[in-house]
Every structure is written in structure tokens, then in C-alpha cells.
Amino acid sequence: MAATHSGALPLSDEDSRRQLRRAVIASTVGTTIEWYDFFLYSIVTGLVFAKLYFPGSDPLVGTLQAFLIYAVGFIARPFGAAIFGHYGDRIGRKATLIVTLLLMGFATFAVAFVPTYATIGVWGAVALTVLRFIQGVGVGGEWGGSVLMSMEWARTNAHRGFVASWPQFGVPAGLFLANLAVLAMSQISGSGFLTWGWRVPFFLSIILVAIGLYIRLNILETPIFARLLAEHKIEKTPMLEVWRRQPKDILLSAFSRMAEQAPFYIFTAFVFTYGVTTLGVSRNLLLMAVLAASVLEFFTIPFFGHVSDLIGRRRMYMIGAAVVGVFGFLYFAMVDTKDPMWIFAAIVLSLVPHSMLYGPQAALIAESFTGRLRYSGASMGYQLASVIAGGPAPLIATALFAYYHSGYAIAVYILACAALSLIAASMLGDYTNKDISREYDDARAIGDRETARPAA
Image (cartoon, rainbow, N blue to C red; front, side):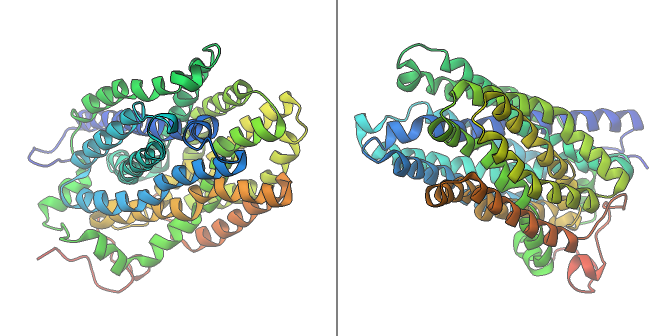
């Protein structure tokens, strides 16, 4: 059947394929930029912010204070999901994605100009906190729209996991660019990096935003949302409606991410503090290792998204959760050798189990929600995990190590996260290869036996 879009005649097969390519590129480039911004802050937190914005604190206390600001971005993400999920289901995926890109870009660019404690005292940390919150709001609205923009242009049900995995590609791409930018600035001699070098990557983010904005302005709305408009099935309050109809799916989506998100930020953010202060390895070794791990995920994320199309989304996800739970112990066994080769290998390999989860995750979560509530439900389920997993993870890891003086205590925490994900994922519905273009009227998906009804 030919695809349609708002205000236009049905598209030919060739035009549909062209729009799918554009949608995938726009989503992937956009998420790359947004995650570059977000990860840049994460990397610099462990390397710089404790020294520049909390200089009077004990090193451990200063690190915890810096990670508290870091966590604010995660606390803000459900707010972004609520705000932009509402508008994504009301006015469309495209317009909402343009706003999230601009919001995130502004906040990141502004970080480059925040004065340190030596200049304005505690107000520097306050400014960072506000900008980090704005970053979090932008990211909170970005993910759902990017995934839906790709997934809802997919031409067949059989490849939806693979197509939806491409916006996930933005995570390793953004991580790669952020680490590359910091690594380049780390080559500055003397105190240059701490004085001004760390600010340059934030400043350069405005160029990436301009590129992403240009690409997103040249895509069409998705056929599924266009159909919802044509059939007058747009909810007045989609976020409230999805909480009423599918609260279980929102909560299960959030807890299913525990095994993916908490370990990821331990492997890619906490590792900088742990590696430099505890293991005594160089900052550049850690940056190079994370760069290599990011490159590997360029291939593993779409690969496991494709595998989920073959064996089922839920099955692939549960296999990944089990592997992550075991790998935490192997990870700390390798890095605690203090051998640069083993540390490098541990960091590179750490993102393979992550890909086993992250590849199928987009489709697994987004498919769980009916079309007219999909942006709201998928965004909220995905971003609630930021409060219980991603944000607290470096703080919990730091506190566990301070108390037990062992990386294996952190590995136990990773195992606990994996167990929660296994339970939650086993209770999620599996819509692999099923039609998601029509409104769900199954009691297991909606929460009651009402059929989808148009808004009054």
C-alpha cells in the first residue's frame, strides 16, 4: 500500500523508499548531535568540573558533587519526555524533533561560557546545573521522536527492529565525537586543557546543530501520524491518556532499561574517575578505549537490531540482559589488573553486551504503545529509566567503591540491574513482525477492552 503524508497525495514506492532513507539519516544525525552534547558533559564532569567548580572540596566529595550536577540531566529527561511526548502525539514527530535539537544545542553551546568558581564562586555550579537541566529536557524529548521517525517509515514489519536501531546508532556516534573532541583538546600542553581547552568542544557543538537542523527541515511527517490526523485520532492529552491506558507498559519499559543504562554510564562515564584516580592510568588511554568501543558499536547496534527481527525482540533483549549481568564481574577483573592492555580490552568489550540490549530496545519499547500515544508512552517509559538507572549509576558506583574499596561491589550492582531488566522484559509484549500501523485494541496492550477512539 502506498504511503501517505499530511497534506499530500499517496507516495509512490520509490518516494517512500527515499523518505525512509531521509528519515533514518535525519534521525541518526540528530541523535548523534544530541548525544555528542550529552556525552561531552558526561566526560568533562569526571575530568574537569570537580576541580574547577568545587575546588575547596575533598577530591572524592568534589567528584560526587560534580556527578550530582551530571545527574540533574537525567532527572530532567522525564520532564522532556512529558512535554515533547505530548506535542509529538499532538502536532507530529517532525516539528517536535526540530525543537528538541535547538533546545539541546543552545544549552550545550552555553556551557562553553560558564565562569569557574575562581571567577564567580558557587554561581558557576548553579549555571551548570540549570544548563544541564535544559540539556536533559531536550534529550528527554529527542529519543522517542527519532525512533518513531525511522520506525514509522519502515516499509515492512520484518525489518522494523533494524530500521529502529539506527537512531540508537547516534549514541556510539555521539560518544565517539565527544571523546574525540576531548582527546584532541587534551593534547594542549600545560594547564591549557583545564584553563580553556575543555570549553572548545562545547563551543563547536553549534556547528553540528546547524547541520542537524538543515537535515530535519527536509523530511516529511511519518505515514502513521499522517493517518492518525486523517482519521481524527489525535488525543487532546496523550500523556495523561497513555498513563491511564498503558501504565504497566511505561513502568516495564523503564525497568527493562536497568541492565542497559546503568552499566553503560559506569563503563563510559564513571570509568574516567575510576581509571585516573584509582587505577592511575592516563586520561588519554581511557579516551582512546572509549573511542574504540564506540566504533565497534557502529556495527553491533544495527546487527543486534537485525537479529531481533529474526529471533524476536524480547528474546534478544533478555539474552543481552543476562550477558550484561555476568560481564560486570569480568569487566572489573580486567580493569583491576591495572594493565593498560587489559583495561583497554575491558572498555572496548563492555559495549558489546550493551549493544545486545540497545539494538532491539528502540523497537521493543516503541512497539509496545498504540500509535496515537506512541511518542508519549515510549518517551516516558524510556526516560523514566534515567531517574532510576543512568543518573544514579555513577553516584552509586562512586559510593560503593568508597565503602567497599572494590570494583566487584559495583559488579554486584550491575548484576542486580540485569536481574530487574530480565523480569521487566519478560513481562513486556513482543510485537516483532506485527502490524503497528493500526490502533491497538487488544486488552493486553491497552489495559481495557475499549477500542481506540478519536478525540472529541
